[in-house]
Length: 190
Image (tube, rainbow, N blue to C red):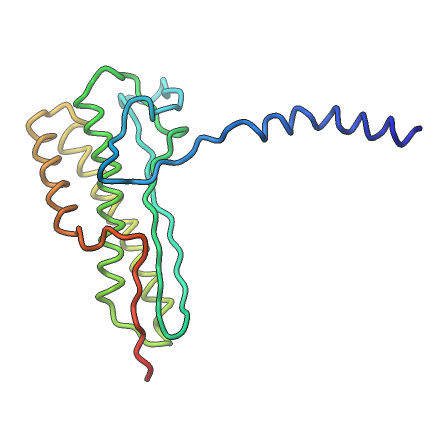
């Protein structure tokens, strides 16, 4: 009887935790050319202390492996709704600007694939080369994102915003061959 009371007590204490665990997660949105962000995708509460009108949290995750003398790597570009917010959901220009940040992340995913395909590897350098390529991509992507905000003044300079939208679109188009889920590279045996 005492064991039953203990179990009931434990279940009662755990039930709020279990209920929270069953709440729908704020799923990430994977980048797709045919799916643009909407203000409904920005679910986080705006940071009142932040001077920006909106914040987009986009990033990529990657994995790589070697199997049967072949390097395979996969990178996913995603947007985080629960970490992204806006103080002005009426501005279409601001929404396009935030889409630009997501597009830049996709651009650097494609550039990562391009560099992986073009790199030279030996068994001794494989891990270091892949790591350096990824590290450089993340740093360059951050620098490009900063330049985008600086030059457009976070979308307030309409002419610069339009220029950047065209520039980002052209760069994505130039790397269209790398709009894939995964790339594979045959490794030469020495």
